Image 1 (cartoon, rainbow, N blue to C red):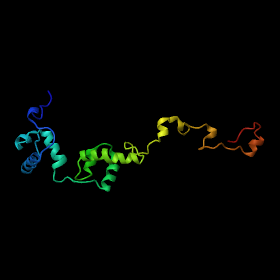
Image 2: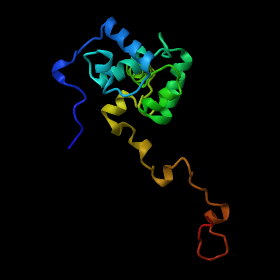
Image 3: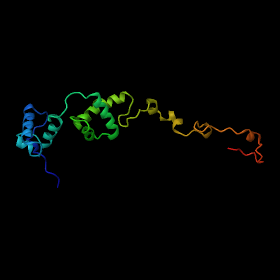
Image 4: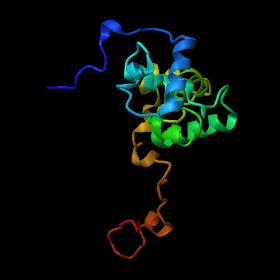
Length: 179
């Protein structure tokens, strides 16, 4: 009912790629272009599955890939895009030419995430993190989360009665407040 396996597991190499395998894959793609990854290993004389060949090409061997460290501009752009898109690494990679989604995801998890945590910023929400005291005992700031009693509410200070109210001389006979 499902798809047939991409390769015969018994006749495939696993683990690190050798220089010879990389050279064969590069030569085949230069001659024939990217295409049917399922048939590529056999045609190129590789004992790898098609998925492994595709990932090796996309993440490591493509000639347009950038090599080396990320620049500060790339760091800033990744942080900005992550705050907008979340963990949608393919979309983020689309805005960083020469960088793969896998490379950006790994860089986020090993460098940027740690940097944000050290600055006290939650990498998921991009907002300042709560203090340790708040995490251990959230009731410490109870008064900040609850509405204070009306007479203590700083947003609407109690109004003073006018002089006529205090003296009961409004002339309405009932001594009602003018508030």
